[in-house]
Image (cartoon, rainbow, N blue to C red; front, side, top):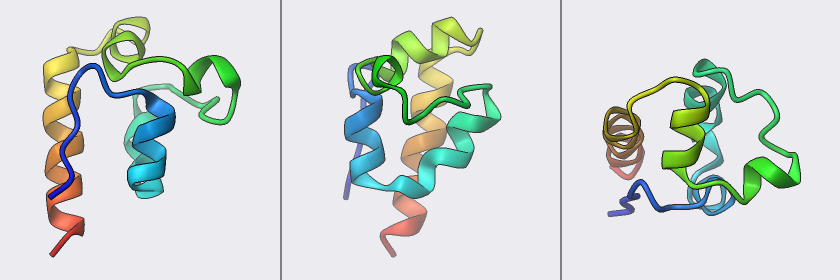
Length: 69
């Protein structure tokens, strides 16, 4: 099962499952294709957008777990 951590890069996350994009866009991360966002960690992206990184990681991992079934 794919799992991410707060240290997972956004670019890597999108390679794991591009279907996670709506979650990221939902927190205001609308420039997923720009080079700076690709090089950010989930934690950095969460802080920039005022989101708790642990909560975001949990939401992403729940999404990934549902999609692997």
